[in-house]
Image 1: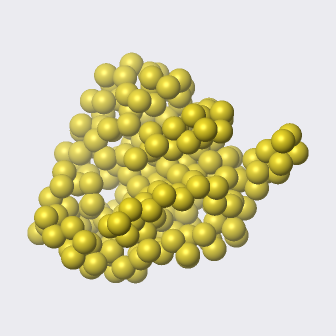
Image 2 (image 1 turned 60 degrees about the vertical axis):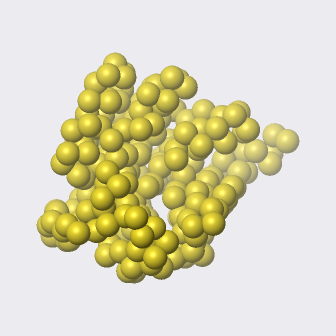
Amino acid sequence: MSCEFLDFTFGRMGMLPRGIIHVGANSGQEVSEYAARGIRSAVLVEPQEEVFRALEREVSDAGKPGFVALQAACWREDGAMLDWHVASNEGLSSSLLEPSGHRAVHPEVQFETRSKIETRTLDRLLQIASADVAERCNALVLDVQGAELDVLAGATATLRQIDYIWIEVSWGGLYRGDSSLEEIIDAMRGYGFRMAHLAMTRWTWGNALFLANRVIDGLVATR
C-alpha cells in the first residue's frame, strides 16, 4: 500500500520523505522496502498483539536504528476503551469501527472476535514514546480502516511537521461511522493539505496522496 506512496512521491515527483510515520503498519510488509529506498527514520504503529510481534521482527531484521515499532490504537482521544473488531485476513481489515458494508464487498473476511483496547492520540504517543525519531519524519501514512478523521483529530501537533500524507480511502460505508473520501478531502483542506493523487479500485476503496500547501506552493514557484 505505502510503497505505492514512494513510487509516486519519489518515482514520479522526485521527492523522498526524510522519514515516515505509519499508523496501521500491520506486520511490517513495507519495512524492508522503506529501508531499501533510503528512508532513514520510521515510526511504525500497530495495535494488534500478535501482528505487532511480527512488526517488531521486521523492524529488527531491517537493522535500521532509526526505525521504531510502537504498539497502540490511535484515536482522537487518549484513554478511551473501545471495541477492536478483529478481521480474519491476518488483521489487515481490523478496525476500531464496526464493519458494515465491508462484509458485502469482502465476504471472505470474517469479523468473529472483538476485544477491548485503550486508545492513544498520535500526538501523545509520539511525545512519550519516540519523540526523537518522530521529529525527523515528514510523511504520514494512514491505513486505519475508516478511522482516518479520528486519527487526524488526535494528530494536530504532528501535522505541523508533515509534508506528505498517504491515506487508504473509501467512498464510505465499509465501517459504521467511517470517513468518506469527500469528508477526508474537506478535512484535509482545513489542516492545510490538498489532494495531489487518487487511485480507486472497483471494491470502493483506494489510496490518496495529500501535499501540504507549502509543498505545493514550492512546486508552483519552481516550475
